[in-house]
Structures are given as structure tokens and as C-alpha cells.
Length: 321
Image (cartoon, rainbow, N blue to C red; front, top):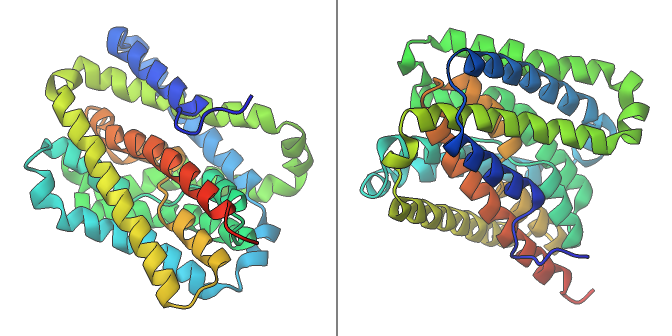
């Protein structure tokens, strides 16, 4: 049975469940330390599997469309951060500094892979180009996002140097990813056969990191700092940012003479932000006490982008052939 398009997806429901459990039963003390170590190992496994799953052939097939890819990367790593910076004075009137930090961090993340490609396919867009753009965004995000965080957010303010943050990125994210790429020829058949198992590993890694982050945040009084009205304001801000970016990508792709298929790819790849990359990177880049607050805007934006893009993809799909 097909899920109604406005209902949350399964992953979002699981995330909500994890947040509820962390809110009422947060891990503390030595157990929290042990679970935190486990989440670090799961993050390494997550990026190893991302490296093993990324098809070089699919990337090469779409690389020739360089104008499209430059536009998508420009929106992801330039327009989004610019919006986060320009909106700061207005956002700080309704959000706490920590929640604004989460909005800015959201703006620095790479695009999603799976949902960008899936929505492009449903909307009858340029799927090979979407594979290339989304994959390139995720790969470059391993380098660009930490660099932008260091420049714009100054994640080293919690006592860690920029060199320490980059070193963590290298050995917790980049090295597992490269190892996965190297092992891909040997694992490709197994990955194809056990796709459902790998999806569970992906989701479990994210859920565990979210649980650890929100446990720490709840212990430090997260829900006392974020009242319901502020949460609704955060959702409205996410909607405004998403609308601005989707409007810009639609307009600029038409002004630059892209085909309708390319426009679809630009809109869906350029407007997304990756929860799968954002959660583990936040754990590496931010102090444990601030991760929960930083991830709250990311998770709200994640669900919002899925619902909006589901509707938009269907509208594109219904256009005359």
C-alpha cells in the first residue's frame, strides 16, 4: 500500500521515536561513554559502506554535463551558506544562538544522494546527471563542509584546533570512505545482494548518533531551552530557506537555457541537504554538549524537503510527454 505523500517516511518516524526515548530515558555516565564509542565505530562503518556503494561508472556517465554540476555545487556550497549568513540578524530575534548555529550548519551540508536521484527519476528528469551531481556533492562535502564550518562557525571554539577537527574528518570519515572505494570491486556483488541489510546499517548508524546527541542535550536541558513556539518558528524558517532555494534554482536554470529534464535535476539536487552526512559530521565537528541542538534544524529540514519534493516531483511527472 502506498504511503500518503504528506505522511512522514519510515526513517523520520524512527528518528522521532529515538528522540522521544532519549528525552525520557537519556543515557548517562559510563554507559553514555560506551555508547558514544560505539557510535564512532558505526560512523566509520557508515562511510565505508558509502564508499563501497558509490558507482564510479555512474559518476563518469554524468560528468560531461559540467555546467549543470557547477550550478548545483554553487547552490549547495555558496548560495545556502550566503542565505545562512544574511538571515542571521532576523533569525537571532526568534532563535537561540545554538539553534542559529544549527541553521548555519544545515546550510553548509552537501546534498543528499538517494532522495535527489529518486525524486529526479519520478519527475522524469536527467537521472545520470543527478547521480553525478549528488555523488560529487557528497564526496566534496567531506572536505568542503568541515572547511566551511571552520571558517564560518569556528567549531574550534570548544577547545579543539582546526587541525584536530580536520584530523578527525580524515580518520573517521575520509579514510573509511576511501577504503570502501578501494574494496568496491570485491564487495559490489555482495552489496547488490544485501542492499536491504546495508540500508539497515545506514539507518542504525544515524539513529545511534542521534540518540547519543539528544541524550547529552536532554541531560543539559534541551527541551527547557526550546519551547514549542520556537520549534514552530524553526520549522517556518526551514520552509522559507527551502522555498528561496527552490525558487532560485528553478529561475536560474530557465534563464540559463537548461532543458526541463536538467531543470528538474538542478532543483532536486540543489535544494537538498543530507541528513546521512550531517549527523556523523556534526558528531566529529562539534562538542558533545551542542550536537543535539545543532542537529534539530537538520532533522526538521530533512522531513520538510521530503514532503515538498514529493509533491513537486509528482507535478513534474504529470507534465505532457
